[in-house]
Image 1 (cartoon, rainbow, N blue to C red):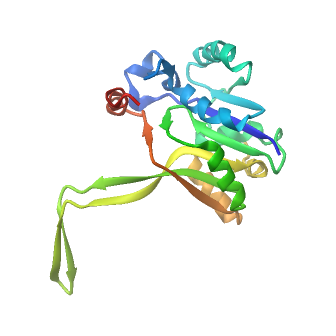
Image 2: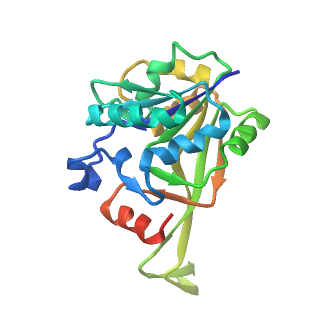
Image 3: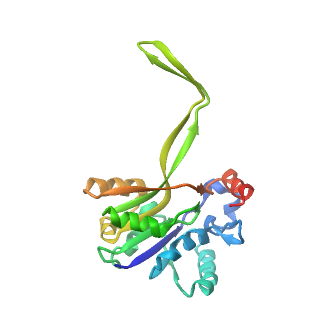
Length: 230
């Protein structure tokens, strides 16, 4: 069994404009003197992957230049894969379908996600539970703007003022059994549809929860990252 890493760095980062008019989102600087996609790469390193593929499309030349520079520190571990079109958050994984064995582990990281993930523990969890795919998840709360009335037969039993509702969300990090990549056909597919396809085909999909996650998808989110210093 081999471990392969994939860093998705192909998107246009439209929600982060105007900043991403000049630099792709995975190359945005983050605290600690790093690029955003380095956070993803460094989460993968403890797994000792045989290769980390960086998938590029938008401003691919800049991504390739960055990979060449970073490879000086990572001993040539990174390899850029340039796609001529956007294939969705799962569709870009198709290139690996002919390269991996069924029992290989493919760890997919979005290049614009800052997360505190013990990836060794996450992979061990994935293997211990005999999962086909593990989604790295986070418990996120959304506070409602209104008071909520708990009623029974139109009688108010309680009033809860502006409650926070919690959901388990995807952090954009995934552990996938290699054989599942053969469900992809080279066309456009986002990760949610891919996960639903795996479930439909009888695959076991689990969730591994983390306690810190930040998506720098918008200007506000990016500024919060710098304000928090994490």
